[in-house]
Image (cartoon, rainbow, N blue to C red; front, top):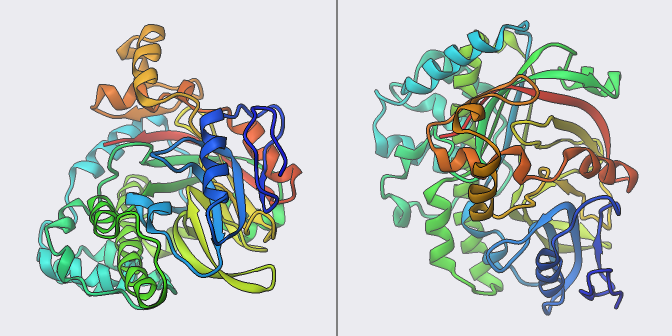
Length: 411
């Protein structure tokens, strides 16, 4: 059992994928070592964005042979990223900020029946939006382009019919956001072209999950270790949450597409949809195992994936390699280096409130919550460059393109 520099022992089937220049929180590695040592864990991979969570680390993937542990997914079930590459030309940040604010104020679901809406997205995900009466034509057209999630059938929706549809189209708190970004650097022309990414073009990107629905599912299943039929029942609930989250991201991204004048199929050059909080049955060392991802983006061989920066740092589109020891995963973002309370205290001493609406990269920030502005400041996160470099150097992914935030919306 190897011992890392911070003193936390890791079992032989666990590995931390991070260069020495990536700051790593001791508590996060201790949490990772503890989960990796649980009975039934056959492989564990910690990403360079690893940071401590509520008893379990964020930024890791764990494979279990015969059990599913809902707590390792947590209340943010289905959280992920939806990126639309567009043919929209560059516009000024000030103009895009005005358009983004207006788009976020409009409610595209105002004419929809809540019960019908919830049932449609619980069962069908984003494609289900196209079937709901009252959905605007542009969103219905975008929804019809979406690929159904191959997660098996959703479970019984009855326990969750509690008004969660009201949260559809909202980012939520924490590190969730919706953004307009500019394709800045192209690292691989052929891969970028295959994803619809072209230097100088604009993309709409949404990072959010299943909102309060995921929390309700987490409370229902608690800290159980599931086997047999219980796994099937939980996976039904999880599938519903993932589909809800997919629809939520489409609605968020559609608002930014409206701001770009690109909310129609002929202005979409490509799309990437990934889920980084979920459980799936995948081959591990030649046998099926339940792979739990908690803030880890899937990166199968040749699959497009996204590593999120902060609002003041670029995100990166990568192409996965299906790295076996990493459970075909990569980091989902830069990773926190400050807790939220520390960020509020320390960053408030460094910056005036009026300065937080602009970024060092020239971007605009739309957020009316002062706490979130401090908690999600770029200084609260690790630098993105060594995180991405760790993934590339370790052979987990290939770099494709960087995305510089132009307008970031947090609500």
